[in-house]
Image (cartoon, rainbow, N blue to C red; front, side):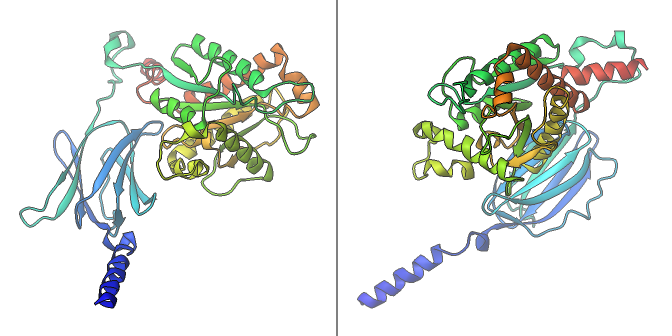
Amino acid sequence: MHRRHLLNLILASAAFALPFGVSATQIRNARLWRSDDKLRLVFDLSGPVHYKTFSLSAPERLIIDLSGANLSGDFSQLSLANTVIRSIRSGHFGLGDTRIVLDLSGPVQLNSFLLPPQEGQGHRLVLDLKTVASLPVALPSEAIQDTTHPKRDIIVVVDPGHGGKDPGAVGAKGEREKDVVLSIAQLLAKRLKREKGFDVKLVRNDDFFVPLRKRVEIARKHNADMFISVHADAAPRLTASGASVYCLSEGGATSATARFMAQRENGADLLGATRLLNLKDKDPMLAGVILDMSMNATLAASLQLGSTVLGSLAGITTLHQKRVEQAGFAVLKSPDVPSILVETGFISNARDSQRLVTARHQQAVANGLFEGLQRYFQKNPPTNSYIAWQQAQKKAQV
């Protein structure tokens, strides 16, 4: 009897250890049809599912995350002509989850719900998309009332690296990275506040420590359109000099320097590890893995933003790299906010350090960062922003 009981326990344990994908809900098919005021997209499922949706701008996208679901169907048969949906993409997301991305031609109002099996139909996820009416181009500009467009400010979150008990890199003459980057970030914030159509939030406006995860949370709390982390780090070689721009990499680092920088910056957060995570069974060293949720679309926007900013800095200071570098920076790991990390120079380099502590050079760097951000948003204005409204006004007057 004892052996039989032990065998039953082993078999039960093996059943619980079956791979998650064996019992995963299948996304079998997608159907699409139009009515007078909306477009309905229905996903046929093999069973119940948990899901969440959110939207992104510049460009417009609707994202559907389905937990514990695998895609077995094919969306290629859907006729998307003359609909707000330009294309449908899908891929694995997290552990055993599926992410579906709808690339849209404009903003939509979404109503989504799940339907249980009924009348011969199985489980379904229903998405009703209603196109948000745009401004009529034919109207003269003076006839367009202010209430027809939200004209909201573009929100930029500026993050001066390090702070408080974490001084960051220290130069040969005692120059501290946390002081240099706070000055540059404050100057950038002042410039952004003077520009109509922009609002800015500083992660810190004084000398105090903020954990990396908290910096990401601040950006998301303010619904940031972009996040820029400002640094002036040390390099493994004292001869390394010049500015550089980094984005998140979902794979490996693009260079040894990028890998070194990411390890250095991520390691600094262990000073606040007790506040970094509120996870019962996780070690703080796993923070990078837990935060690694960046979407491909957000990463593409980050790379475009980084390239524009790098081009602006080229006229102000030497560049360490003439391309945007990538590595696993924890502070850049927001799933829906385009994020870049700017190394304004290396404080470990004597020439860079000498320039970085001067008010004139700090102002020049801040101006360069502003010009890069402004150029990016002129090309990619969020749909409901003041800049988008301004551009629509100009087109209406042509």
